[in-house]
Length: 47
Image (tube, rainbow, N blue to C red; front, side, top):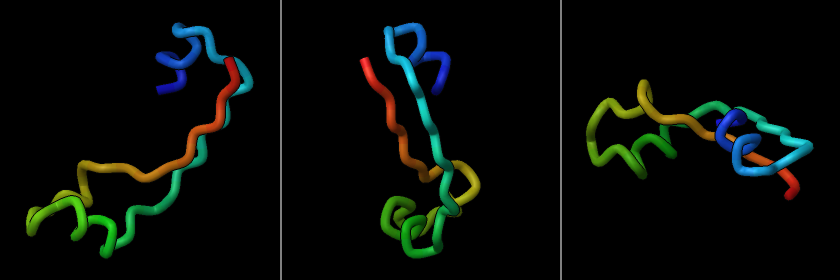
């Protein structure tokens, strides 16, 4: 993700990864074991 942001002209990139909670996984997983395949994070970057 950081490489994509750099290649599109963003600077001062800060990516903070957060734990994927069971509640979050249920919301997006529709009953699947999606927790193994998704991420949760915050991205702050300036252009």
